[in-house]
Length: 126
Image 1: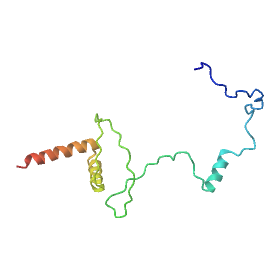
Image 2: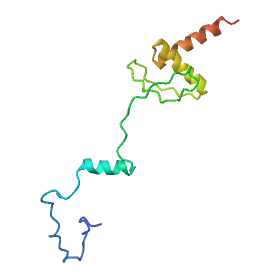
Image 3: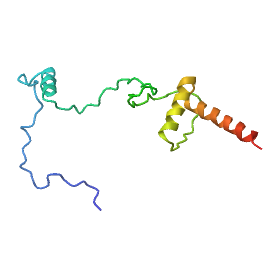
């Protein structure tokens, strides 16, 4: 193997790159960014920039015409650091979140209390 790198333009010694220079000034004929934004919004062009997250209101599940909204992330420092994923019905998940919200508990605490109640219930059965 050779220790030297292959030349990119091997045998092309007459390649003239002197015309490539940095721009001296910005183009004065270019439209302002605000003008470009107005024209693109008027033409219904979609931006490639990520949409800014706006907090969505949590719908009241008791109302008949409640629309499902995305839950806000729950970030709490509790010392619980093991993830537990379970498939459940939507009704069970909604009840789990509803109980957690009503009691002001984090989800891990709700799970721990539910398990304690289940263990007490099972121990009480003959």
